Image (cartoon, rainbow over all chains, first blue to last red; front, top):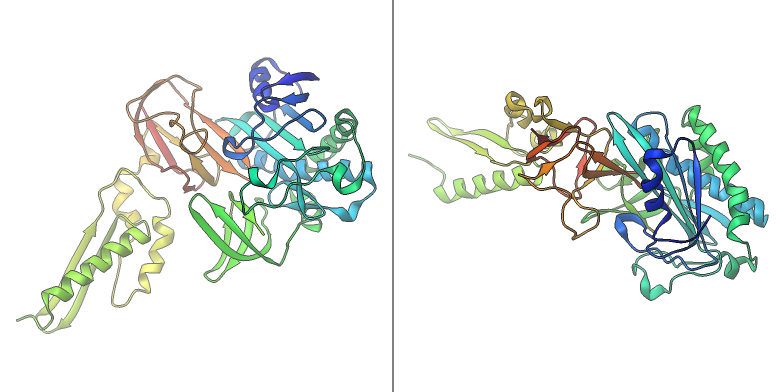
Length: 237
Length: 162
């Protein structure tokens, strides 16, 4: 547990060379919290910012499936703490939504080594009590919500970690037996399945129906040009 | 005498060039028979350091173009396949490639840059996992074979480091 850090993923990268086993880094505050493509992630005290760092087995493509394990584990922990299973949904690939708003973001960073990776950092940010204003977000993004605002529940970061750490260990163990069961669980909680969505990769935005995810985790979108598998994109509703 | 105009030929050739770019091909050759002693043979080739691995997959789209028969571009680049180059860094996964840490930032490396073993040379993203790809050996970046923000296939050559 750190009082203050630039980012828990950055701390994980610094620790990686000497770090043997899985380790959780929880920070009360991040001064340079990051999201996808180095977008800033608002990280005031009272919110949850933590990273799980470890040395995963498997190919780089298999390691990327930890995205689904992480979002399911976070949902498991939040459901256990709130008793509100119907309120939480998952947005491809790993956002956790509460009442349709963005509650949490997960960013995984790995360092490649041959066909596999030498270490993986799973960074998780949860808006427990505070969320950025709409003006500070992508105009197409979902509204940001807080656990406190939506449920009236005030959960301490350490209490969330106490539930998240075992949930994550369980989901990662599940993934070690293959993606099948994890994929089915993820799809059972997926937001907008069978509905129209937009997927933006670089300058390209594709409109289509969110059919499913395939056995590599890729988003399967049916567009006017047919079915397409998308391994990386930002999804908009 | 040609029964079709030179203007039509030019329009046809520019349409082919457009097709080439649109489908990320490196070469298209077409022969059109207009009648006895009247045919047009065109070969459009793109010189580029960027080798698009979508070329083979894109080729069937050409087959549907009116009156066009195409040679898959893969056949023309096979002789100098960068994936077979001893200094090639290949993609360990399907995903999107990024040449810098964030949009608009200085790229990790440029052509001519000296790199040390283990230094991050690019990132490949899949499922919101940012996989930092290290230089497999120390050397000089000779070629960068991908552009920022574009899709890459498993095994695709990304960079040549010698």
